[in-house]
Amino acid sequence: MVPLRIYRHLIPQLAAAARSPSAPKVAASASCAPRPISPLPALAMAAYGTGACADSKLLFRQLFEKESSTYTYLLADVGDPEKPAVLIDPVDRTVDRDLNLIKELGLKLIYAMNTHVHADHVTGTGLIKTKLPGAKSVISKASGAKADHSVEHGDKIYFGKLFLEVRATPGHTAGCVTYVTGDSPDQPSPRMAFTGDALIIRACGRTDFQGGSSDQLYQSVHSQIFSLPKDTLLYPAHDYKGFTVSGLHSILNFGYQVASRLSYTLCR
Image (cartoon, rainbow, N blue to C red; front, side, top):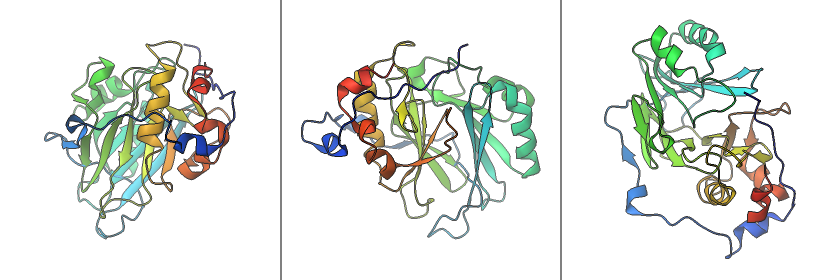
């Protein structure tokens, strides 16, 4: 597969444009209310204090696969005796590296999760399940892909005392989701959003294949990501410029990231 490229917005505009009354919004509905997934236990992260919950800590590692410029994220609740962990967007080429790290850290991997069906690399979830039968795969129901757990907008995925909220962010593909750390007092602060290819640092994912829609991506980014607290940390599935993370406030202040609907159409 040809690596996914960055397509920058071509029409810079003021951040205020996105906050104007004319900016489209996705209406909330009862079906979008967060609903727990009973079979899924709570997620975990690394050496990261969780505020009010002193005995819960998030272990967090950002890992990189250079051929496809893909980021994989390891999160674990090291405050839990079993140290339950999840991997977001694992790559087949680096499964051994990831599993060795999990073993070295004394973690128990419970979920191998994908933000969407990837076109530029082979996911590592199948290989992980072969090497670690106890781990379960997770992907959105809208993706149409097979997994042990198919999640939908509003679901909460628990590991230990921590959890990730599922936000549907279609546009790059019809099944894209963003995983966001919890918003309750016992969860890590600031919040973290794993945006997949919906929103890369200073760019968005391409929309000209895999059932992509620039209009849908515009609505997803504005309603589900830009609506998060301004101190939220954004972690993409890819980067080709050496960036690792961005604050939401920085994105909102970067004109073309909050530009018009047309700029998302040009993001191809």
